[in-house]
Image (cartoon, rainbow, N blue to C red):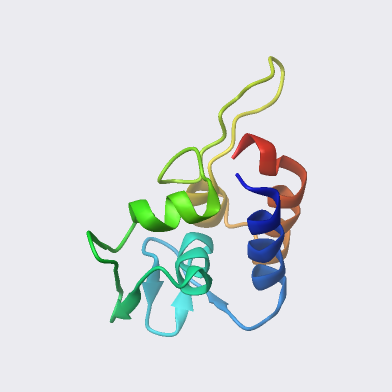
Length: 116
């Protein structure tokens, strides 16, 4: 992930501007952490719960343009596991399954940006 973009996403998650949801990029006025990435990227627009870019309509994973804007290694915010002994992470899992808060996810992004 690109360091400057990681900081931008972490700051957005910590801002208190976004209500958290799970299972979709956006649901009503709630966003998952990757939905926040879509929202701040400027790479498309929302059509309800769908994020539309020039090439894709996505509801649960990052569109290609957003993935490339941030420099994510995967469409789910999955770590590349470059170092043995480092626990793999996936931002979708931290948000949806582990129910980490946006502030906790922001901390992970700040610590592991090179691996995402």
